[in-house]
Length: 256
Image (cartoon, rainbow, N blue to C red; front, side, top):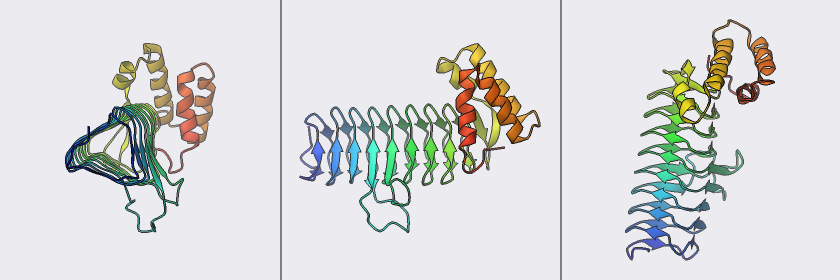
């Protein structure tokens, strides 16, 4: 299952059915779970743990040192879950000691060609990063979010669950759940209604989310008053609760 032209460190822990293509390099302190396929010319350095049934295409580089001038060779980590797809030339760096020391990628994500995940990022599940989408350090992305091609996210920024970031957008502030953001710098455009419908949200839930969006962005209310009104709505509309919780913990302020 391992091509004779691949280089696999004796200190790597590779499941017996993992396939590794020619000229790929697997370093020490790398663990790779069952059913994972690694194409040719892939480089994986550790400490890195990769779950089961991932697919890693040619020229991807996973788990190398963070691109941070403050990094001094500390033993930080990259953690990758199950059933992720890393297309051609994707790059994912390990964490730094200036955060939790871990870059984390969850399950069932698709990272298209040339996308980049910097140090200390935390990605949930079912995320799509289109071609050349780029994350600065310490970025958080919630489940089912979509990053359009050539989009970029400033370091320490949060993208909420079910968001849609348009192609070529430059995100410099936090984007609450359900929101579609466009432009450079990115601004709120609307609710990601199509994405919500595809994810099984009911028409009533989507209507409630639209009302919450309008209250926050179109009512002219001060942010504090809008949050209070949204908290009240969340009492009977659970789908609004993530919206409120995200805004409360925003560290860079939300897109406006």
